Structures are given as C-alpha cells and as structure tokens.
Image (cartoon, rainbow, N blue to C red; front, side, top):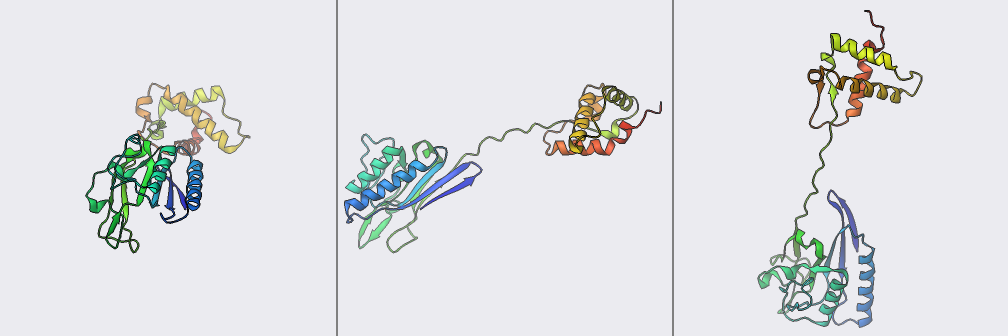
Length: 255
C-alpha cells in the first residue's frame, strides 16, 4: 500500500510493506520485490520517500561494501532475506534507518515470540534524506500485533526559506492636498486618462497605477507615500483607493 501526501515542504510518499515470510516459496519473494521495485520507480525523485513495514529479513551488523545504505548498527547475523533487503537498498540508494542509530537491544528487536527476538521490521528512506531522520527505535512496552512491537522514526524536515514579499507603496490620500493634488491632476490630465468605455477593472487599475507612478516622483513623496514592509492584496487596495478618490481627479480644475 502506498500513500502520497502534499505538505508545506513538498510531497511525501509512504509505502507500507509486508514481505513474504522466510518459509514462503522463492517465487513469492521474487514477485514481492519486483512489485516493490516498480512502485519505488514510480515515485517522483523530488518526493520524500519512506518505506516501512515487516520485511521479514535480518540485515545483520556487517556493512563492508554497503556503507552508504547500512550504518553498521544492526542486530545479529544477516540471512538470505536480509540480502534481498540490502539489494533493494543498493539498487535505489535507500538507507536502512535503524542501522544508523546505536540503541539498546530492547530498542532494536521488533519481533518477539517464544523466546525468539529478532529485527525484521525496517524503515528505509532515500540516502540523501537520511539527515532528516533524527532517531529510530522500538517502543518496548507497546504491541501493535501479537508478536510485533512498533518501530518509530523521528523526522525533522527543514522548512524551506520563506521568500520575502515585495510590498508596493501606497498613497496616503488624506495627505494629498494643495499643490501636490493640483500637480498630480495636471500631469494626469496632460497625459490623458484611460478610455472610460473600456473594461472597468482594467480602466481603474491603469488609472491607479499611473497616479501612483506620478506621485512616487513627487517631491512630497516621503510624506504622502506609505511603504509597508509586508502587504497583501496591494492591487485591490490600490484599485479601491483610486475608485474612492477619483472624483477630484476627473473633475475640472476650478482654478
């Protein structure tokens, strides 16, 4: 079973697995790993990938030639099914997370039955994302099935840097008086107002932007223009201001 979630940091794909037991036919195991291989290949490269579940294999403590995918902190000896897990990890550059963390034996054993204690449940992530895994351990006092204990991983995914919003200046209309008001009106009338028969939104947006550009070059700009550090919906604010204060702009100059 696989699940793909959209998060603020990007997409996260989780593949839940249950591999055939050691006593099963080799054909069943081959089919399982072929299917899992296809599913992994279908995951976009940019996704944060997690493979977790009962893989029914022992990866052991040896890591010679496998340093990239095996951290050397496994349990016991490797078996044939563990070899399959390692082959999968090498093929897709996946890190077997629990082998990168030193823990007490009680925090490593995921399966306990009739005195047998083994590590058959595993969590794998892309090797490049291993730095996001802060800890992996078994919860000894909890059971999720008759013989299995939960294996949990703590992830710390860094938030991407927040882009600074570019806030546009906004005219303080209540301060636009006297000579400043007359100068803006004169320049606007000389240039020509937008076609009043055109689309309403475009007409007023054009008028508002023109007013703002003229005013930014005005000597009184420092007193009558507000430059916010962060402002949302500036375009709508500017358009509303232009609509509200357009009466004196289009009126004839009494002087």
